[in-house]
Amino acid sequence: MVLEVALIDVTPGNEDDFAAAYAQARSILAGTEGCRSVRMTRGIESPSRFVLLVEWDTVEAHDVNFRQSERFGQWRGLIGPYFAGPPLVEHFVDVPA
Image 1 (cartoon, rainbow, N blue to C red):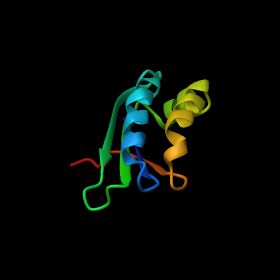
Image 2 (cartoon, helix red, strand yellow):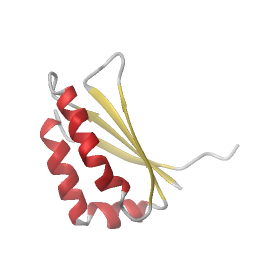
Image 3 (spheres, rainbow, N blue to C red):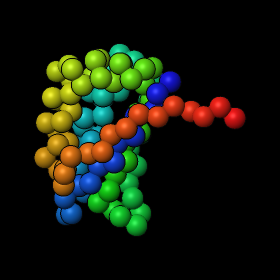
Image 4 (tube, helix red, strand yellow):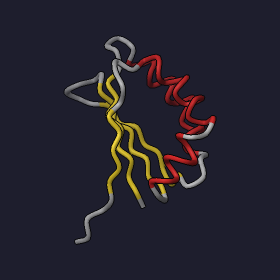
């Protein structure tokens, strides 16, 4: 399992519109082959900052099944207009205990 973490800064004043667009767009992402779960969180100290957490089977599931598909364009078309700048996206794996 791979965890995608996307730090998204939204243009101040557009937070509620962004959240509404995410609610509409979530199923596009969640329905992608290899996507296990999707969660969006919002900052308390920085309410214009959101963190998207997506569990994927593999990095390739994210890159190929989503980012290289028409789904990405649909997703970005809904939420992208609210971005203050490009999101910072990284992938992580669990550390064995």
